[in-house]
Image (cartoon, rainbow, N blue to C red):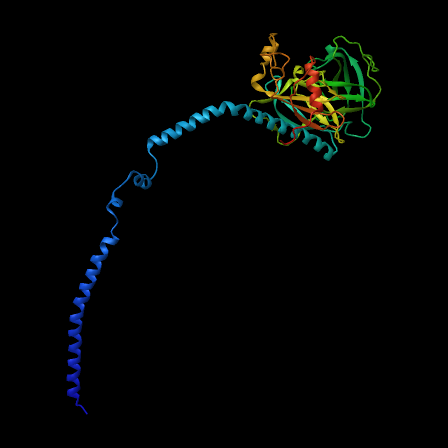
Length: 408
């Protein structure tokens, strides 16, 4: 058995031999590695031409555009836009007109729907713009029920009087003339519910008188008291219309009904787009414009009954209609000012005809809104070319038979 000292000595020699081997091998490995690297370097190095910058490489490496290129693109876009605006402008304007006609038609149809739903007479009022013959807005109105006094069986007396005896009257509407004045003793009637131009009828029959006073404070409401002044009106000056009421002496008590004017509702009014108007000069009743709204000087009102038909057209007076109602959607710039009309000059309304080229050519970019008197249905149609000299009647006849544009 070897001694411990011998074992340690043998182990030391073995350790020393291992170190000597490592010192001999490492230089050899380092030399071999260096030789291998030297031999592979030519293969891994790219050719010299690959390291030279080329135009294509520079273009691929560049980012963004130059200021000159950007200016050229902007100039091209501006030229294309300038060329496209004259082409697109008429189409955009026609689209605005079509949308305005659709909005107005829907608003009028809304009044008809409200009348059917509420079982009351509801309508629209066309608001003139500063007294001119065109409207730029519309509102809903409701017709209050007839007023027959505050108590059951209320009565009044009627007496014909001279015009000089009438106290604080208001003027009759334009185009109507007073034929007779009447003084009414209404007793304890609540006159705050009665306005100027309301109409009163006695015993549920006979002509309706227009209430025109007294209105001392010009608030359009009958002054407090027991006396009301009413007039029998006629479109003909000096007309003689017989009445059953005595002159200068009160009649026996008679029952009465006061037909009150429509009042605006709390609904939001419709404001037409800027530059779009309802041409009241070309709007009215019937194919031949038997009643033209523009010449009457008041805000026209069109009402619908609970069954959906047209109830009344109210201008200077309320009237029932049997013919279609036409509203012409036009452009403000084609309307002459009202001063031109009052000045007596030659008037041209280019919303209807293109008078610059031919007075028989219609202005085809406008729209008709047609309201059927019996059905109350509201349609919207484009202005159509007429083939015959009866330009106005033909244009409206085509509007009646045309298909509505609906929501297109």
